[in-house]
Length: 113
Length: 112
Image (cartoon, rainbow over all chains, first blue to last red; front, side, top):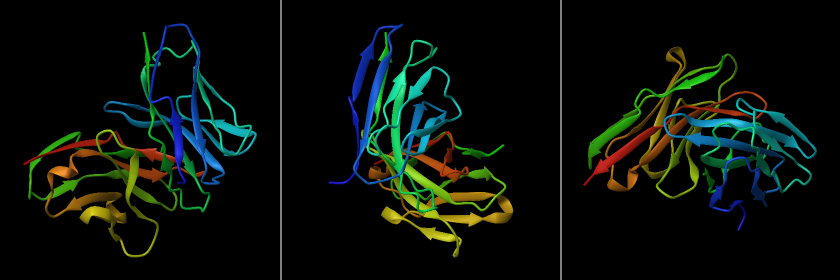
């Protein structure tokens, strides 16, 4: 089946540790996105990538980093510099048709203890 | 700045009641508008979308939305809700460079 996978579903880390969230897609989409979802705040864009080896900061990039070495993969690292990392993280992709419709993965819930 | 405003954060309805969720946007260019739904424990999925043409858009599961350009609105409607419509609903507008700008979401609870 075509789609977006995120792993793990739940992740627990100690404060001060970096953690990397996985996002893989087999939709052959060029563009990929990372969002953070917090109650009452909707989805906020962290980073996005329009093409392999290129990515841009979104609205809340501080404390996060990404890489885009392969078209299928767009991992997100939550660093110790992120002041409030506990959240639900969603990955999405877009086929670049010009209509901006995005397809979402199931999400990873990160809890920093 | 581009933004999306969803006026109702929590809505509680009884089954068979009519639903209207408000969405207003601020964007200076040509708009693409979306409603996404997140059922409990499931992926965020597209409910309906507007790109151009008929401003009344029909989506899945009996939902529809009307684009009113003069009011910068894209309200979601359903004439008769079911318990299975309990979910969180997000309005979004294109923000350029294939980005989407999302509203804060509306949590809908439908009681049998």
